[in-house]
Length: 161
Image (cartoon, rainbow, N blue to C red; front, top):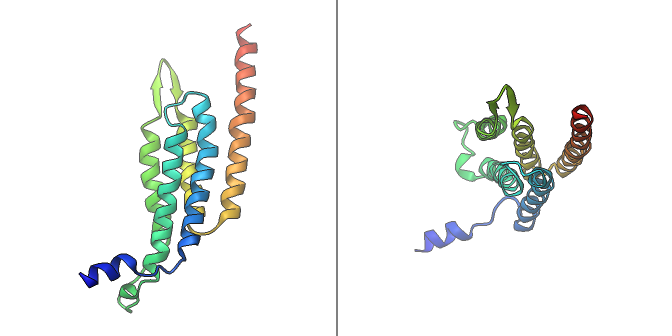
């Protein structure tokens, strides 16, 4: 019983406030990206983007924690943190591909899929403590989604006249 208690209460390499802060930033940035998709009634909106971002952040934090665990400090254990990026990218790409459909001669869901992919990258950045990169990517994504979305809407309505 004592071993279980020690396992549950062990001190992580990153402090709990840092872990919490990184996850909260991932939640916040994912919400900012997902809000625009939600506002446009896209299938992957606010909750989906938050969860993708938060999951990516969790994987990044787990990678940091695993890299600093004594069990993995042996010489015969080789860790490659770049695999983290590959795993998250592959997983998010699988989810994003499910939103992309070709119907009536048009492709739908491409921007939503790209937004999910970006949310994964932003989550990784948050989890790895690269909050400036996450903030810049989120800001640029919002500009692209909002500004270019408005331009597309105006072009569509002007072409219809």
